[in-house]
Amino acid sequence: MTTETITRFAGAFVDGREHANDGDPLAVTNPGTGEVFAEVAGGSERDVDAAVRAASSAFEEWSAQAVSKRGEILGRAARHLEEHLEELIPLLTREQGKTLRDSHIELTKAVDTLMHYVGLSKALRGAHAPNLAPGVDGIVLRRPLGVVGAIVPWNFPTTLLCNKLAPALVAGNTVVAKPAGTTPLTTLRFCELLCEGGLPAGVFNVVSGSGSVTGTALVTHPQIRKIAFTGSTPVGEQIMALAARGIKRVTLELGGSDPMIICEDADLDAAASAASMGRFYNCGQACLAIKRVYVFESVADGVIEAIADKARRLKVGRGDVKGSQMGPLHTAGQRDEVAGQVERTLAAGGTLLAGGAAPEDAELEGGFFYMPTVVADSPHDAPMATEEVFGPALPIWRVRDLDEAIERANASPFGLGSSVWTRDLQRARRAAERIEAGYTWINSRTKVYDELPFGGWKSSGYGKEHGMEAFDYYTESKSVVFGSQA
Ligand code: NDP
Image (cartoon, rainbow, N blue to C red; front, side):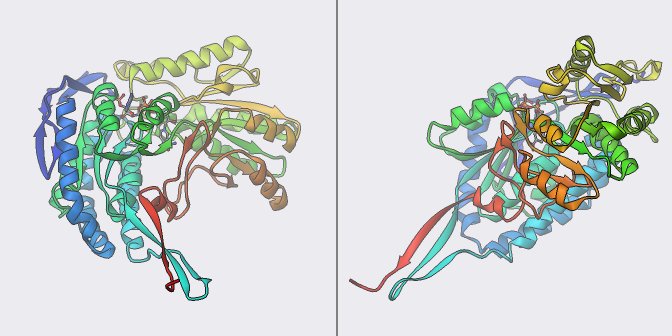
């Protein structure tokens, strides 16, 4: 067992430089060892106010630039950041727990998203309504909102931030971000690197801190025009209620319980691999992940055994140890929550086919590990069917046909992602039309494309990120009519 030295951090990056927060300190823990290695000063109301004021002062000049110029500046900053990925990858693994490979994938994707919107900065076009009446034309102007507050969770601290940051900045807004209390370090360095790379002071600021103090101060600050939030559904509901004061704009990317439907004519090997990858990557801590599998009963035995076999063979280990395929959960609380959902589901009548406990390996004792778990044939009202499982545990059910599969898939308060596995494209199309979710993959899984709008239905969220559509959520529109004089 290692003993980590605790390093102290000022906790914020405001107006182009480090800012010393004066709130309560946050302990940053290495989930692979369970040891605290850093202490970060949390942001008080005063610290949030300083950041929002800096962003507000920077807004006038930033929003007045040509949109392509903003793209050019962001692009240069993103390239500078990219040159430092080798420094950020181990830092992300140390505070989040994910494998170095997953940190590499996350950070590369974060840069890709920034560059995607840099590209779009040269392609923005608007709407025009010609000849509304003889000699009368209309155009629709779009203008940035002002200062945007971005609040993100700990599972993908940088990509979830960039989904907000990139369209917000290109559209002309300035941003104050609050990372999760347990993952502030990568985000602080991320901000510093973008500023070093040429992002003007105050355009992007970060204040670490707890949700209850720093998060609430950001959401309720009178100069914040919009909150872009990713996190749990209960906190999303609170933010939506708080944002009512001042009619602040919100986008909410919330929880999910994505169904996967495997039909009898699917490529069953590919489907089993996708179920395993789609459930266990990032240790199952992803909003978009395969969280419920419904397999046609005629092929169920083979598919269920193939998925369980893959789960049993995954190499669980510390994120910074070569060869680890799945790291720890992010916190002890997160691990206990998942273990509790599995236990309650087994007690309700499910069959355990893999995992169901922490690993026995003494080397992993201090970390927050849990074995990849597969549970089959539980009742449809068991916790793993009705609650979001945010960890490496997959429930599987047998279904008669597509109608039953879709009925089960839709019997959830969530509606984020979904997938359908079949070689019959008409059947796939019918299923995609009927499943209540913001994304349906046909014969593929969980990959989000910057080109396509992404956002949940029902309790999974409100508004869209990604795609050209993201700009609609960071701007106000104004219709302007050029008329002939009456
Ligand atoms: P939380 O909702 O608890 O936290 C998310 C962020 O909100 C954190 O920064 C947190 O700070 C902050 N926060 C907490 N309370 C408040 C508050 N009252 N006011 C303002 N901010 C607050 O989510 P989890 O950490 O549990 O993250 C996992 C959840 O995120 C899952 O449900 C998952 O499905 C969802 N998610 C959704 C995605 C999507 O795109 N739809 C993508 C990824 C995850 P602190 O850390 O200090 O508590």
